[in-house]
Length: 313
Image 1 (cartoon, rainbow, N blue to C red):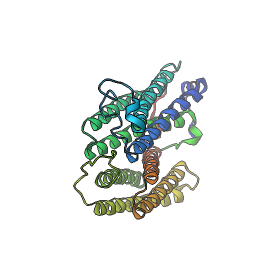
Image 2 (tube, rainbow, N blue to C red):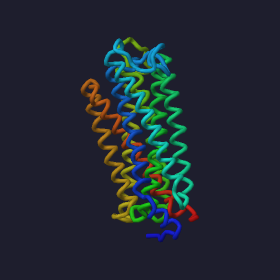
Image 3 (cartoon, rainbow, N blue to C red):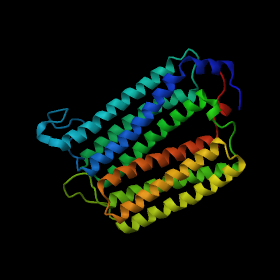
């Protein structure tokens, strides 16, 4: 395992718990927002607050007249404020280090804040377009973009403060290409998943909302084929990394990613054969977060570990 420079070690000794906790909190909240967004959709609360940025034209908050749907939608909106606060805490914690934190970690915090704003705006447009399935899909992809930044931040913080838990050097070229292929295949899978969702039920409101003009069964099968392709790529990568170093970080990460894919595939099969029960939709969203975070971490561990590329200062 590589030895950190004195300045790096000083940064690690200063407030490692605070930085790790702050980055973990933003990661957890970015997942919670995806899950609560799913709850909003399957409970038909997408227009519980019928306008934006106010909940009603004359009220920032929900009112008794909006009922439980208003409470659910307004609660989800309030989580954006909570996430913004956590991101600001992370930025402050990183900035207050007497020894500068790695530039990538500092920039990632600001990227999180920018994407929180983007998600809020896209969410508002989604409401103003009366839950257009195209905007709902874009809102989910924006949430995945936010999850990307929170995952990278948390991973890099842990990698920097716990070098014993990080890879020393990039993986061999074949393994790096396989990891990139897994990431690309996961992107395709997630996009296809949004199209299957936009074609199927659970439009997000009790009203009759026009769905995407695709065949739901065909889109579901195409989505399933993409999942299967990703599983094959992940399996090949896991085997190669295990043969190279059975106890290595990369091997462990590939196995976890493959496990998340298997879990997600199982949930998807149960969904498609049981008329898409609402609670399984929410579980599937959680699985999507696990898969995407796993794919991002797999890339980080097999391409450019922070300790191998970040100059000491």
